[in-house]
Image (cartoon, rainbow, N blue to C red; front, side, top):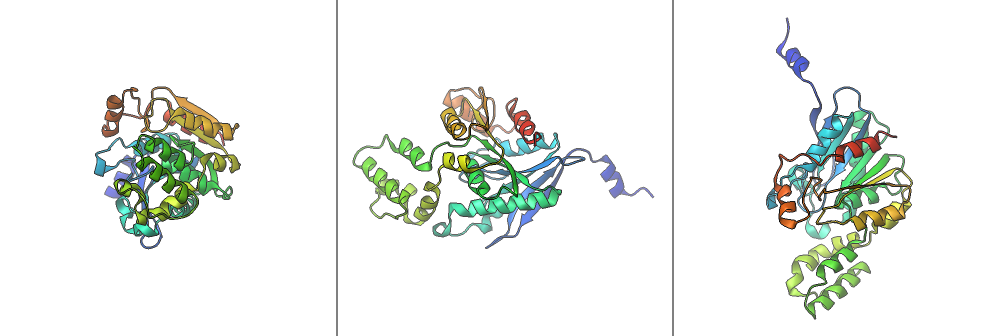
Length: 309
């Protein structure tokens, strides 16, 4: 008898998507494994950017729905590369794994990335996994790779900052009026030195509130150029030229610290890896359009680099 289950299996073609769970405290972490049809040639973990960014690269709270990670995973699967894309602690299905804000440290995301890499490799029978970090995920990938060359095949850093977070924050806060600017810069200097502060401007409570300061201290201590220089494995740096959040100078700074890295600049490509104009309104319009494909060259360059090794 030709069963319905067998018929369904025979009719199913293309990549296979499977929910995956990673044991963690205080609750499990969740993600999606997308495995190619046929032989798995490599596996990668896609690490999300900052804020409430989910495994697909969306932030529903802000109406952002470009789904760049889902599109990247699908493109890589078509080329024989499996991916695990994840909901980080406190986000999406991993919401219950998020600790109280005062207890969160950047190192938690780093440790989770290492655990996901081990899980991805084990599930696909690979000796190691690649880390594909986007935006803040690029910094997480760099920190996770440090000292773990045996379990991480290589890094792909997409739209990642090439400066410590303190430098980026100072740039963003440079337009504040005095004396607020001086107070903000003093607070940053203290946090960079590992000390919490109490005399912060009330208008900047969202940035410097006491409960977030331990996290800021753990984050501000990281220098992407120092981390990439210390990493001995393969690394690709991908950056769009119309990215309004991270600039080409950031990618070039990381490449200068690792002259043997592959630097790829995508002309007319923005932060969510879509073809976009330089003008801000037109650029940001792509953040809410899931029907737009990834820009030509993004998937091809990432896959081509990974499959060299």
